[in-house]
Length: 220
Length: 369
Image (cartoon, chains in turn cyan, green):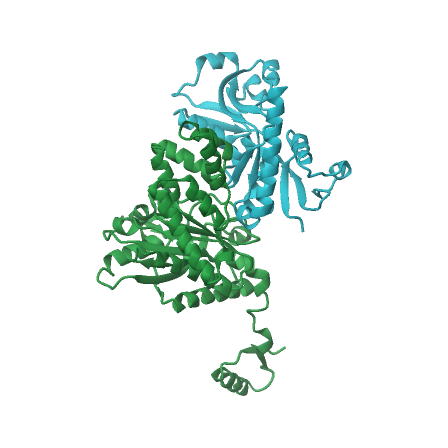
């Protein structure tokens, strides 16, 4: 039995996350990572990793089948999962923004007309527009959201932006930033107490690594 | 037709055979412990006026009730919790009874809450309320009863986290936080967001005490964290809270239950409702708390009788899920059943059956094959 089961968001954050674990001595062999197994143990056998879709990380952690997880803040905001969020892991920085074509950016939101917004983040989007008193019609897409305003499917989009290149190349501009995001360590509420020693050890190790990285970044 | 007939609305459940038996068994064991501590059962109505719950649990929470209109046009609600019903009854009908009053309950509650973590819209709460005493004995009693109940049903490896709302309240007052800031800090502590807490407190405290505070609210532990907390906070309210926890913890040590208790100064959930010591119960195999309790000295006054109270409840659904494997078989009596075949004379079969039943034996009438 491993001490802790950790869910890792596949894709964008996976490599940086595994690098960070390696930095603190939690090593998973390349061979294991490349295998098609969904659940792999580290070399010490104390940690078991599962690799799942980003949006599923909070689900696994909230139910407690994973004790901890690594995923972006965007996923946490959207899922509203009831978990602990003890660490900002300091990588995977990006922004969640409202974007649109330049002319709609100039017009701004019209509180009298319903805003049509395409997004992968319906909850965050609805919340953002409702707070501003703008009626919103959500078009929930699962990818290539930038296409929506280009083809006239929606006026605005709410999506992640790292460098802004995709937006620029599609002739879109940022209208507003909803949140600054980065990768987070999340921990199940029951595991936090029932596996207190292991969880605290993991958090402390990772925190030290983050502080070290930050120090190195500032000096270099 | 057949598909719509077999369709069950989300969030409710049908339980039978083993599941039904183990639930009833758990419920009986727990209620027996409550009786053993002189709690008497109160059976409460499934629905009552919606206003009652809004008053008891706050408007926002009461939004989650299933509401409907009675024949007189008044808005009714399925009970989303039991405590409001108990509190109203004590404040109105038990006004002249001697205090403290000890009441226990067990039944389904209904909440339209976003289904998450495996929670249903309908779930079964078994719990108790101890009303009329502001003394620490009452808090301790409730905690001890909770531990005995869980031990009696054989729940393994459970941990009770012990907290006190005034630890946070004292700090918030000391920093002069307004309502919004308070809620913000509370939310950060609840999610254990260390860095956010640290930067939030920048304008209120120096670095050393910020770091210590972040450590305290994000790390639970045994007695040693109380000493650390004492060294850190100087306001009277937080100090008194630490003192209360220390006293209860000491009793737990003496009676040998301290190993079950984890002190958690960072539990700030339910601050609008609880007024003193609080606790939550966790067990391996479940990602969420299976029970919670604490002191709520403000509730009774909402029903017109200002008096202190403390209580807790367990979620029977979670207990049944956790104990399913363990109770499998333990609650059946299949082997002890006498099977009577109706192959022969039907009169003698029923004669024999009633004779066995008079001895309280288990029988099953088998049909002719």
